[in-house]
Length: 45
Length: 409
Image (cartoon, one colour):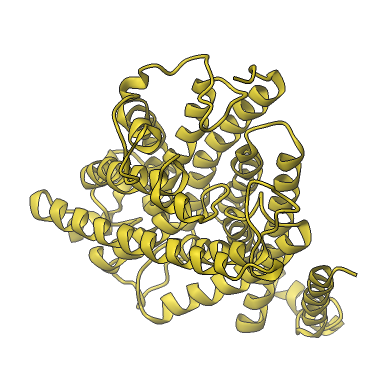
């Protein structure tokens, strides 16, 4: 395998792993967070 | 002499039109990021330059940049007023297209470069000072540097420095000059003490999309032919933009705890800037790495500029100056003659000297652009003043400089 392609793959995997681990991702948002957000939107409206 | 090739000519003319669209795209990109009271004046910077530099380029700019070399430093005035420019190719640069097509393609590069600088002095520069500065800068910075790097006989080109589509000529010159502008003009009133949020982020995203689209002409068009090299430059451009968007957004997510939309847009532009000098010299996988480096590197640079309390209003130095430098140096690392026989191998392909050559080009061009920009700004300031009054700045430049408003109450 082209080593440069391997480095590119590693970088992409690192980015992807960061998204998964960061708070606020789809996996990190709880139902309670979503409800609170909807309530806030309703209040603003 | 080769005959004119219809496909090559069509591609270069279409590319010129694509690059032309980048300047209005830049106007929207910048216009969305300023406050509501300055949106028209910010858009006007790009729109006005589109007209101004077109004329300058036709009269003397092109000849200074690409006329027969005088000692490797500047072109002579053989092509003044487009003298001798017509349907016959200029074989020194593009043997298969009309000379006029080459001139108009290069004209679009000359236009967008000073327009890029305008992001650094948005919301506080007098329009009259901007007009004078732009004309002088295009003549005294852009044309000579374009000659050094791209013209036959240009001394940086003779050194062997690579710049496929303008990382050094366009982005380092404009980015470094932008930093000097920010320092000389000083901060906007209220900078650091009151919020200055973008007034219309959707406008900025639209501008980003137009820039990305136009950049295909900028980079792939620089192949000057409908050929394999153009296709490689095209895919490299797209991949670097995508990686730049992802990496900047990720860095901003880690730093500020949220994935910024404007960050993704700025990252795409950073990736595009980074790949510009390399687009026709590297493989697509290398372009991914360059896009990553540009996205993260430019994000860090912008953070440092903000931390240094320099009011580079729309991050021109961080994105274009630093992105251009990253791209120019990366070209010295990743370039391979397997992609472009007319180029050179870089560090990873057994030629470390190419990286040194790239570094010399970066340093010389950055220092020259900074020095001339500083002198121009100081001279213009001494004669007519470069900054609007405090009252004008607080009322906004749209009304005080142009007598118009973008939005009616």
